[in-house]
Structure formats: structure tokens, C-alpha cells
Length: 188
Image 1 (cartoon, rainbow, N blue to C red):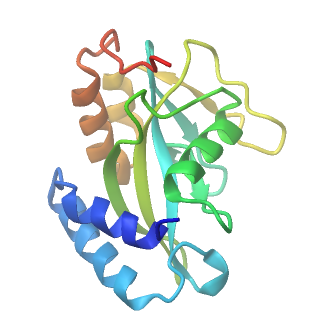
Image 2: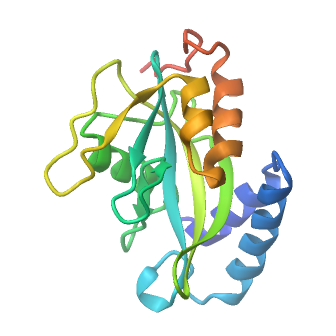
């Protein structure tokens, strides 16, 4: 079994930052991966890796209005013990959207990194993946934010939290057209 922290480090080192914010985030990620004894586990300290997804589909992208922060963001959250970031991203996106989402057919695609303060003294090292959803309305379960919907790319860029702007631009460029007709699809 491979070491998920070592695998994450390799992916982050190979990831080209899309802007200066992401460049600073990548540098902080690499520093913290060296410093933290258990970077994937929130139980070991206030600085830890989280996983999220830029959910794409034929209608654009799905955003959720964060219940505490009151900002439009991508679905995501903490990594559970024994999970890899890739698995956590799909689980979190499924839980928060109520949709059967998945990585593209050719496997997980790391598209964005962001380091941000989640609350006073609590820092998330957020690794973001491209996640594909079916052309269905989100149906989040009780307990998850009910303010969730599909946005066109232009709408999403206009309303999304600034920490997500770079990730949205990268996702949009990867899928080809604004309508998403060139979305990567599973072939299995």
C-alpha cells in the first residue's frame, strides 16, 4: 500500500499553480507536509489537509452556500481516518450534493490548491479535484446546506468565494466549452 502523504506530495510538486495565490498555497502545502506528523488527520492539530471537488456537469458547476461562512463554495471537507484525499473528495461531494459523483474516467485530476483560515487558529490545506456529476438537480440530505445549485461558468465566477476563482478557471478550461459538452466521461 502506498503512503497517501507521499503520493499527495508528488501530486502537489507536479501541479502547476494557476496564479500567485495558488503558488503561495503550494509552497505552504509542501512546508506543512514536511512539518506535520499526521497532515491528513484533523484530530492531530488545527492545520490539516482537506479535500474538495469542483463539481462539473452539462449545466456548468455546482456551488454550495456555506452555512457558517455564508459564501458560495465548492463541496468538500475533512478526510476521514484511512481515506486518501481523492476518496474523501468524492465522498464529501456525494454527501453534500446528494448526487452520484465521480472522478473523470481517466482517474483523479488535481486541479487546484488553496490554504485558508477556516476559523480562528484553524487552517485548511485544501486539495481540489475535478469531479463529474450527472445532469440532475442536487438533492442534499437533511443536515447539509440546502442552498446549492448549478451555476453557469460566468455566474459561478461572479459569485464564488475568491479562494475558488482559480479552481473554477482551471476546471472550465479542462472541460472545453462553457456548456460542458466536452466533459470527461467514464468509459467503464
